[in-house]
Length: 426
Image (cartoon, rainbow, N blue to C red; front, side):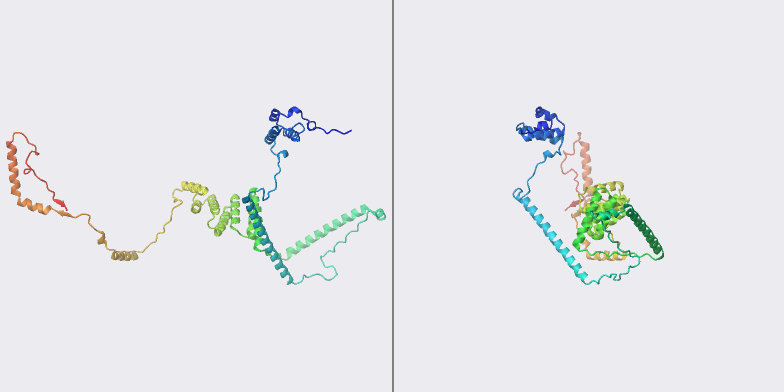
């Protein structure tokens, strides 16, 4: 008699009414939604594509990290990717392969050079005498273990005696270490200290770049974790192997976070000596100067940063803030002019030479020529004085005889007084 397999509804303790849009919409249990989705995908109760997709969307909102929502993606091949993307990936892989080949060739060359140098080294001094030297302990002989099937030896084995031997060996070792420490302390107090210098390993440029890059990345990880002291130490190790402008710049930022502004300014100067147009180094130097209350020098550094990057927001905000604090500061785009002092003798001699060279009479040119009429008018007054007096008497008599006052306009033009200008323009 064959055993009927259990239905998924019974296995997951679900009802047929649970396979409904309204129930799935109201369900907030992620585990139950997963069971419902498994039943719908199995097809035991029928094939409902819309209900299945609705259950997937509901499960995605309730439990987005569910394993049932994962979909397998095909492997990336030249047939599944666009031609441009595949060509870029292939070129990057080829470039990486070439770099690795060059790095391996450099390492193999260094290894061959080391082997050639080792051939010319003298042999290592060794102790040939069989007598034990003072201070040299004999190597312990390996303890022979009893086989599991050797019952005679197991009958003679005393575990308490063996444990006592182990305790005695441990006590002897402690006494020996204590005696050696006393001897070393006495010798160090009597004799001068001798510091053994470790020879520096010879590394190629490629090895230095790799090791310095690893140290720098480790320092970046410490900096992201806000462990600035460890980050500065790792940057220092990288700089000891290979000094670079990037590493100096990173260590300066770590020093700023540690409020060690003098060291930060020194690192920024080292970075700027290698890359004078590094805007990040200029900004960090300005921040360190501003934090150390050297505002005028910080303003000068921010102005230099604006020359290289006029739209930098950090430099613009800092310069504006400093100009509000110190109104006598010049604008960021101001140019300093040099003034040279000249002695009086040299100035007088130079002025004389200039006066000799330049003809100032050529610069004076009249705009209009004017003729003076005053002398001619005086002569005419002297000659025609009688005529003026006679005309004036006649005019008075005519005015007395006339009953009605006549306007000067009705008079003849010969009796009217003409005014002529004394100075006439040509």
